[in-house]
View 1 (cartoon, helix red, strand yellow):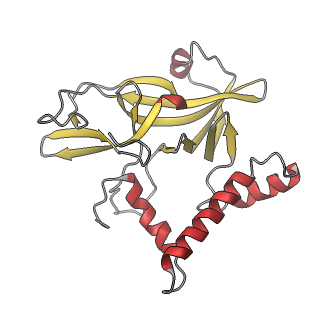
View 2 (tube, helix red, strand yellow):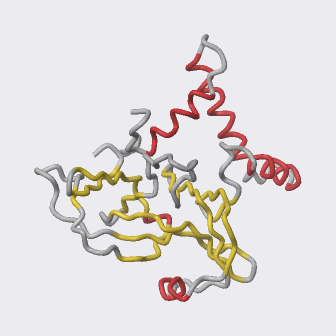
Length: 223
């Protein structure tokens, strides 16, 4: 499992291991540090704290491996900012109903308990990426790969955020298992979707000559 992880949540094993500092009370150590990190992250959006304090916490978290969420747009938290730029011509066409002056790209987003990621991790030369966490499953039963996570800015204000995704064409479920479907091989369609569209993370697996996709069940939705 350590060398051939197919699922995004398994990449958290490394972080969980780092939370244990001594052999006694390992579970309690993980729980305490998990809640502490959550508290610190949410503190950056607490209106009861003075803005200079929130800014100082945010500046510390940006340089911390677990402090990934530095911006909030609506109910979505964004982190690991990449760049702020003008939208491309293709992006403007996809955003015809949501025109914007600038896009700010991020590598991670959290909405409704589902974490979204764009891009593959940068590994040393010769190392192979074994876990691709860019795949999502939407509420309208579509499987997508995230191209980029963006906040849409007009007049200096982030008005909305969402994802540029490649939507796959899929075939019939495998042997009656409704949540596992094969890709048809047709070229994916690029679209812009809002964060509210995201239902779950998903897995994309290649077995022999076939590639399959399936959602990852979350802890509050067990079909």
